[in-house]
Structures are given as structure tokens and as C-alpha cells.
Image (cartoon, rainbow, N blue to C red):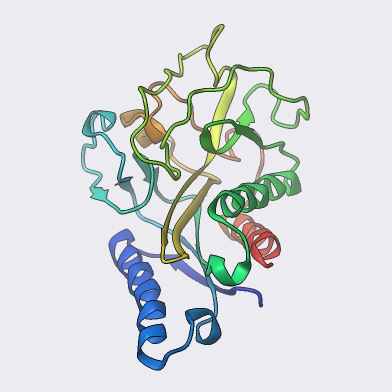
Length: 258
């Protein structure tokens, strides 16, 4: 069964976060109250929205990765990873999926989300790339349409906006790049952070469409000092928030449906 898609528009982060937690808890409550598995009675959901400016900090987040938040609130969350930014012009998608029913594990779930983002970028003529150990999707800033494989050393595994717990010190993304810089020539265009509670997921993925990117300079995005972030507009793609939301929603439904 496909997830039910809800486009929420621009909504505050904290109430949306609380709603995700409540929805996930209700699946467990239903199971215990009537003796059925959650996947038998509650349909999976996909919430698509946009948030006013907010920094969200993951479980592995370190305060020193928030360089200066200014007037933008910082919210501690229960997702994996470190700090990221949400703001106008960004499509945020929250898949609320029962992985037990779907029949795949967390690693494949993350791969499917990333693949949906890559296919969304492809719709707009952009090639998305994975960087091993750094969840999310990246693009070549100088040639966003290039299909050439990345020829870079892989960074050490990181909890950056992803799945893990504490890891060794993160690699530094040096501005301008150089030998040994795993992010040389790349910009991060989509960030990923999830939570799995009793095989049910919440939190999700954020795709940058047409944003004010300045707030990213106030943090080490996803825990990487100097990591460049970008959006579709900056790399020359003219797309409305609604168009990007529709395409991403369709791709997520396609790739998350068993």
C-alpha cells in the first residue's frame, strides 16, 4: 500500500515535530490496545511541508557546530545526526513508514530516500551524488549535470544528519577544496535525518530549492566545518517550491512503496 501524501504548506517546526511523535506513538498504542499490529490498522504517511527559519540539532549534535544562531531558534530533536537548517524555499518531506510492513531495513530505507532525491534532481536536469559516510545528496557546483563518478577519498563515517551515534572527529570540508577534501567541488543540496521507533520512522529529508542560504554559514552543516550548501536556484534551475514538492513527493512514494 502506498503512503498517504499530505501537503501541509508552511508550518512551524515544533508542532510538526510533536505531531510526528504523536502519530508514531499512536501506532504503538493501537497495537497494544486492540491486539493488532500497527501496519494492519494505520496507513503510512508522507508529510510534505516548508518551515520558517529554524536550526534543528540531532542526538549526536555538538553545541560548537552552531557558530552563531542569531535570531533563529535552535531546537533539540531525537533524530540521528547533528545540526541543520530549515527555512523558506526548502521542501521538507517526512515519511512515516512502518519498516516491518515495508519489508526492508533502515539502511535500505535511507538508500531509497536518497534515490528518490537523486531522481527528483534528475527531473530538473541535475545529477545528485552520494558521499560515503555522509548521508544526504550532493551536486557538483561547477557542473551540476555531470554524470561522472566522484573521484574522492571517502570521509570517515559520520552521524551527520543521519543514523548513527557518536563517531570519531569529522573531516573538515576545506573551502576551495584540495587533496584529501572529500567534499571538494561539491555542494550539499539535500540533508537527511531520521528516527526509527519500534520499526516506525519519522523525521526525513530536506531538499533546497530556492532559499536564502546565508543561515547555513552560521553552522557547520550536518557537523562538517566549511561544507558548502546549495539549492536548485543557485545552480541555475528555475523551479517553484510547489513543483519541486510535487516531484519529490511522487518519487518518494515510488521508491518507498514495497
